[in-house]
Length: 443
Picture 1 (cartoon, rainbow, N blue to C red):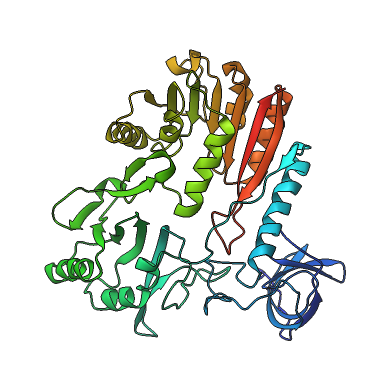
Picture 2 (picture 1 turned 45 degrees about the vertical axis):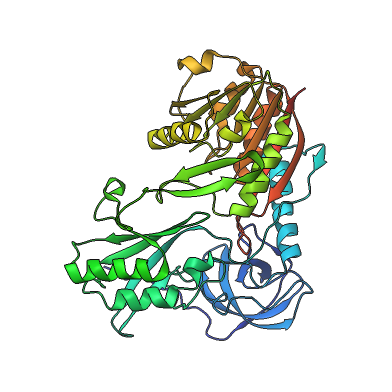
C-alpha cells in the first residue's frame, strides 16, 4: 500500500503585499497566481508571513513581521490578541473595523440579493472592551506545563490559548481568568471539567461548570467558596443541559436579570438561555427596531424567533397586540414569565418550528400590521416566502449573518417589499461577526 505524500510547507517566511480583506478578516495576497490568506495583515501592507497550511487553490499564512504598516493598524489592546482565537481584528482601528463590516454587508446584499437599501444607516457602536456577557470557555489540564488553561482556542488551532485575563469579556469574569485557573488546578477534578459557560446580568454573573464526573465534597466546597469570594453564581452541569443546577447562592431566585431602560422593562433569564452578548448594543438595537416599526396603539405585531421576549415586550409597550413565536419551548415559557413580571397583558407567546410549515398554526391565520424577525445564522428563507401573506406594512429584520439576510431580502423584494434602510450594529467588536438590521416596507 502506498503512503499518502504529505506536502512540505516552506520553512522560510514568505513576503506578501496585501490587496484586500476576506470576509473572515484575513489579508488576501497573490503569489504565483495562488491566493494567500494571511492572518494579522491589513490591505496595503507588505508583510513577512509563515505558511501554516496549503491547499490546491490557496495557502494559509500568519503574519510575522509588518514591513509597511497600514494607517488603520493599531497595537492590540490585549497582549494575547495575536494568538487567541476569541478576537481576530484587534490589530485594526475601531473605525476601520466598522467600515469592514459595512462593506461586508453591502457586498452580500449585492451578491446574494442583487439589491441595496434606499438609505444606509449609521452604525450602532459601543465600548470595544469589557462588553462580552456570554461566552463558553474551554478548560484543559496540560501535563507538560502542570497547569490548567481556561479560555478560547488559538487561531485556527484546537489548542487553548494560555491567557491570564480577557479584556473583551465582562470584567467580572475577564479579570478572573488567573483566579479560575488556580481554582481548577486545586480541584481533584481538574482533569474532568471540560468547559465553563459564562452568563452575566446587570447585577449578577454566573459560571456553569461542566463536570464530566461527580465532584468530591472538597471540590464542591471549593467552587462554592469561589462564588462567595468573587460574588458569582455557581452552577454545575453533570450531564445534559437539563441537569444544570445552582449550588451557590443556596437560596433566592435562580435567575439573572437585565433591564431595557427605555421601555421600563426587567428581563429575567437562566444562565443557559440565549441572550445578547453585548448589553449596550442590545439597548440601542431594540430601540432602533421599535422606532423603525413606527408602532401605533392599534397595531397588531408579530415577533418571529422571539426568544425570551427581548423585542416582544418593548413592542408591547407601544402596540395594541403582540404575538411572539419561538421554536424553543423553554424560551416560550420564559417569554410568558417576563410578560407577567412586567405586567403586560397584550402579549401572547406560541411555540412553533419556524423552519418547517407553520401555516396550520392558529396564530398564522391572523393578520398583522407590523412584523419583526430575528432568525438564527441560517436565516429564514421559508418564512420570508410566506411573510407577504400576513399583510404587514412594515417588517424589521435583525440578522447575525449578512449572507442569509441578503438572500432573504431578495425573497422579500420579490414578494412585494422594498428595502428601505439597513445598517450594521457592532455587537462583537474586534471580531468579523456582522450583526445588522434592515427595514422593509410594502412597495
